[in-house]
Image 1 (spheres, one colour):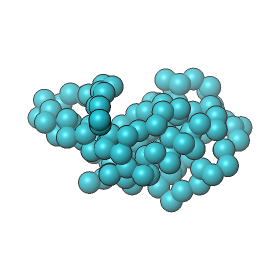
Image 2 (cartoon, rainbow, N blue to C red):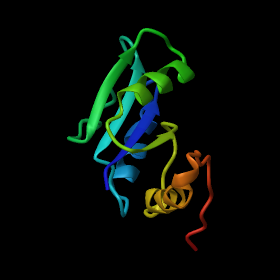
Image 3 (cartoon, one colour):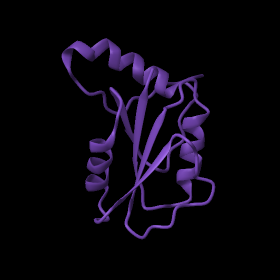
Image 4 (cartoon, helix red, strand yellow):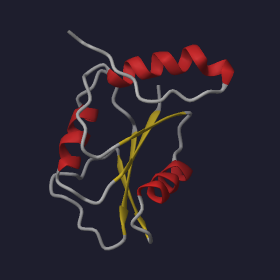
Length: 116
C-alpha cells in the first residue's frame, strides 16, 4: 500500500523523532514530504530515502501543508505535525478507517487508539 505523509515544519529537532516513529511503524510510508520555510536548516539525522524536502517562501503552517499536499503521489495521504510520536499501528489503523469510508469520499481527522 502506497502512503504519503505531509509534515509542515519550522525545522525543529523534534521532527527527527517523528520521522523515526513513522519509519518504525507496521506500515511505513513510501513518501514523506517535509515542507520547511525557505532558508531553514534541515535537522541532522533527517536524511532518509523516503523523505522529500520542499521549501516554502512563506513561514505559515497552512501554506506549507497545502504545498506538501499538492506534491503527493499516492492515493492515501496523511498530514501530521512535526512534534508527535506515532504508535506502531497508527497508520495501519488510520488506513483501515479510510478504506471503510472510501466510497463516501470523506477525510478522517485526528483519531486516538489506545494500544494498551
